[in-house]
Image 1 (tube, chains in turn green, blue):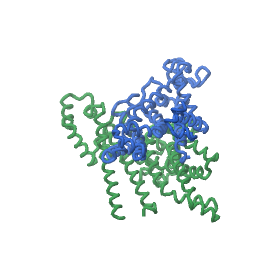
Image 2 (tube, rainbow over the protein chains, first blue to last red; image 1 turned 90 degrees about the vertical axis):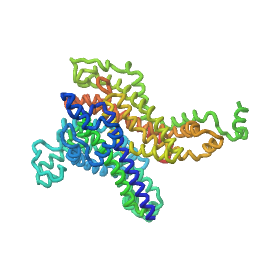
Image 3 (tube, each protein chain N blue to C red; image 1 turned 135 degrees about the vertical axis):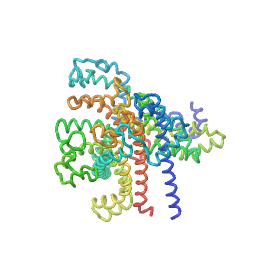
Image 4 (cartoon, helix red, strand yellow; image 1 turned 60 degrees about the horizontal axis):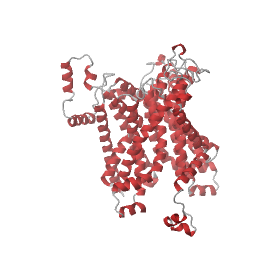
Length: 338
Length: 302
């Protein structure tokens, strides 16, 4: 038993390494496909030909492609992603700087997604085939089908321009910028720790709308998944037994069936979190949220190759990690795998 | 007639009715009727049909020329003359949305005819041959799946340069892995079925078995998958258009219409609201249709 488990873990690690290797290869290929001249991006359009030549050699572009590939792998594995043209600092530093904003946004969004999606799924499963189930199906299908950037804009029009409930673009009102100590990089926590309640309210007003809209997709995803997990449990014999025993319906649903889908749910939430990163690229652009997504799109539009490739690679890494996490969580908490 | 039927199917004369010829057509009609019975999938069918009509008859339905600028009437609110209002160049938004349906269908069509065969080929080969071919193909598939599709499409478009065709290629490159996985799973269940083994014993080549026996059997579930994919394709294409990387203006693509309308949205909401509603409606329709088709083919999921 134990030996097979180690073997399984080794196999898993092997797959991860191959995937990482593939990610690196893919970003390398994409980088070479780019019609942008990497030398020109560094020296600028006004440089004379000798400077150009020098940088060209310095970047190793005269070497055969497989040597370039080798150096690329070496750079990436040692954590050297090059300098971003837009900011002039190492791309790694940039990513670390913008990441908290995105994590904060995605975390609030996932809380909303779980808080609404899971009860919705349970409700649909327990009211199967009835009006509530159909309504849930329609709601979740809408969540799947709406372009998130569009909902973001409609939200801004209604809740900012018309009703003036939500804050404008950005993470916090201008007046509060720099008025609190940055402990964690998460404004909601930092403002509270600094004891600046007004700033906290401002931050909350700014994050509420983008996070809710970003979370819509998770609501749909988690709602649908919860529904099918619950349906599976509710059709089992032990649920029937519990009902025959005379337990209340509420206790059957929550203490028996729901308890058994928790492990599955946990793994799904990890995957949903990854999906939020994708939506964040669009939502951050709409709400001028200074996070990872906006950094990626800004660098894309500027043709900043280093920054784009490092960001894409980073997202790939996060996805691999989240997949792994969801596997590990499943193995850890599922009593059957013990 | 009866004699031919009897030879083909000896049970026919014994009073055991086994339909041979009419099955496929009859089954199709029956399935279609069943699909339309569910109000949700029926509305999907209706919207997709409307989209097709809109695209084919665009010149008849549109009230204005979608590219005709009218600088005297920029940003005018919805009215009887301009049902959905006008944009920053005074172009009629309703007409642009009508013509935009052509762009949307063009993207869906191209992506589907690229993704379907590639996914089918890789998936069936992987499942049928197994061994190192399977491992190699599946590792590549895993790598593509480990990227979120929008980010991967962004990276490809960044590499190829903005434009409608490049967006199509980028979306196709990100959309094939789920199709390949599905085709592989189907092939695995079909590989050892009696009719495939019979064909093998008769000496059919692997090529023949893959294309004449297995691929055809994979088609129904593949079509469902591709239909559900279309909703994602529409959303990804719109997102690329919104980021300015997809279709370029003045082409009336819905995503890029939202993108240009963004600068004016707080005063002129109709620039953003209507194209987005169109995207949502069409994507919803394909989701409903895909859902309905899936229930039809696999009643257990209901």
